[in-house]
Length: 176
Ligand SMILES: [Zn+2]
Image 1 (cartoon, protein in one colour):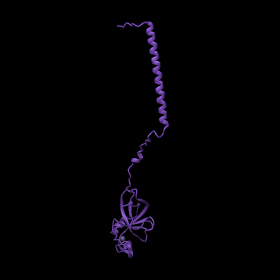
Image 2 (image 1 turned 120 degrees about the horizontal axis):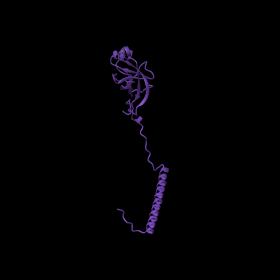
Image 3 (image 1 turned 120 degrees about the vertical axis):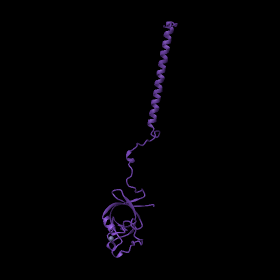
Image 4 (image 1 turned 90 degrees about the vertical axis):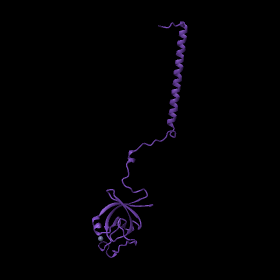
């Protein structure tokens, strides 16, 4: 049932124009607000200090280190490795079981080095291409041990012979 409109024609016209004016005012205010917001947004963009610097995640940094040399270690380079025993077969007249620095030659610890390349008493970490590694102490020298050459001590001549000639990366262990 349609409700009877008691307003006169003139009143309805006045109401309509009032409504139109209100709508216009509303639209104007809306435009002003939008333009203010846009201006303030531009102002924020223009200020580089205002925006926090977000670093992009680079998955390349997630790759774990395959070698366990720590950051203090000094990379010496690639070394040729040979092996020797305390017998006359390897040491000739020096075959007394003692190293050039006076220590008792010990398998798993003693290596002979060129002291001009690696100073005596240095902890040397060897890392083989397959990833295996061992820490030694440079405490001996040898007639044929020059430059990037390390002679690894073994108690048994046969073990030294089996070791043969290898290659490994050498690190000077600092701070241990
Ligand atoms: Zn030998």
